Image (cartoon, rainbow, N blue to C red; front, top):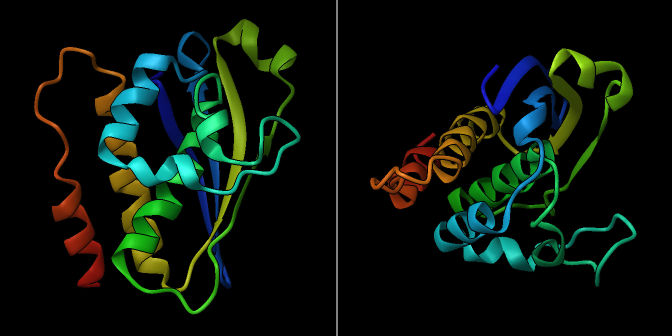
Length: 157
């Protein structure tokens, strides 16, 4: 299993539901990976994140958070940069199966839900987010993702 795999996608009215599989050995974001992501998307640190820890900002949560939670915030950030939103974008990530059940098989499974104004933009942002996260998990990858190009692509949808 890759570090992050989308197992299932459900497009609902105004929201994208993702079943996200993650390899157990890369389940949590390290400080190095967080720094690489924040280098590309510094505003992620300012996202509101209400889960009972820290001061309510994703910047306090990014190191040690699950990849599915990082995916949620990156998708929201890319959508927000691609087009002005009539409403605030929001997301939620939760365990789909108990870790005790899936860990012995080498994976974890979470559900990530992200709101959207345009389903095509949300799906495109999901693909771009996966590319960005994959890059952050490859310390030898020199070619940074073209975030401006991704945003321009999403804005054109």
